[in-house]
Image (cartoon, rainbow, N blue to C red; front, side, top):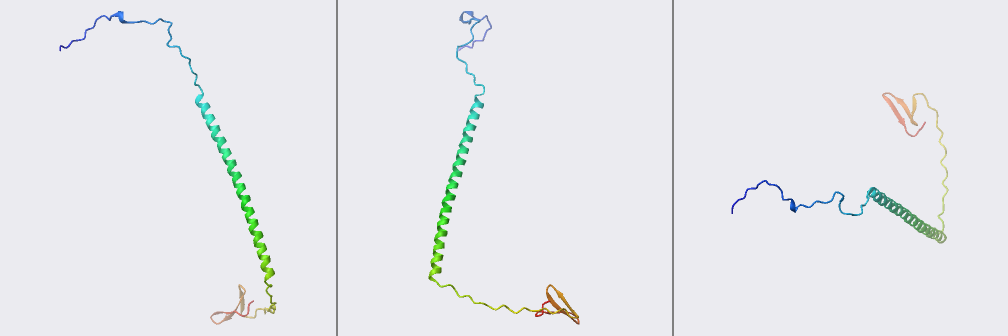
Length: 138
């Protein structure tokens, strides 16, 4: 097989087709998509916000119902406990209370010479310091 070198020659114009100058391409309806992304974003955002608000309202409604049920149970338990307490007091006699006589008041004597009062305690001066008098408060 022989190798053929390319040659530059005049093109054959018989195989070429020319379109008329008034041709503007295939006729299709054009779509205007300006703002479609924004419209879709606003729609999705509004839907999500609405769903969240509805869910929040439903959760608060359920919490309110649960709190009311808990209060009813608590009131029933308190009423039951009260009736048990009343029944117990009817069946058992009250405990007798004893009157304990009040202790006689202790009179505090004034500080004598060589005595000091510190934090409600009486101290007496001795040779090398102080001696506490625990049974004699000031």
